[in-house]
Image 1: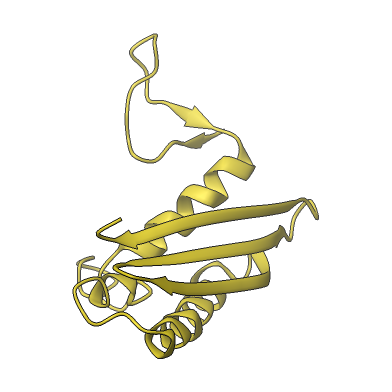
Image 2: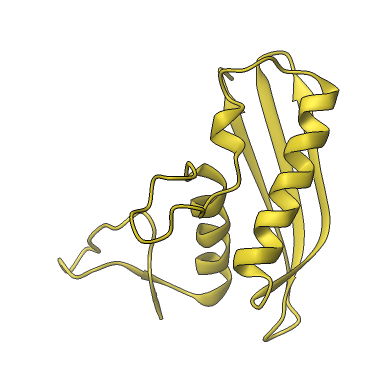
Length: 119
């Protein structure tokens, strides 16, 4: 079992845990929504997504975010997952990211969807 994110307590007052598939999704979420420079011992950790939240939104920005997100996933989670598809779409003030992946250890397919912005 893995420690659940965000850190919380379960009904018994113990640290909440989760299974491998959920833990991987939570690691992806942490990577996407961590600003580079936010972690003391890992200043380059993050995807750059949060830098784009207050910037202009366009298909070109979505393509750049798609590229940087794919690179961050490969760098930090490449030994755990294989990204099979990643799409970033700009819709008004919301940036949507859809990630389809396969867990390397089990071959189990997973997907995660995230939104950033004013939506």
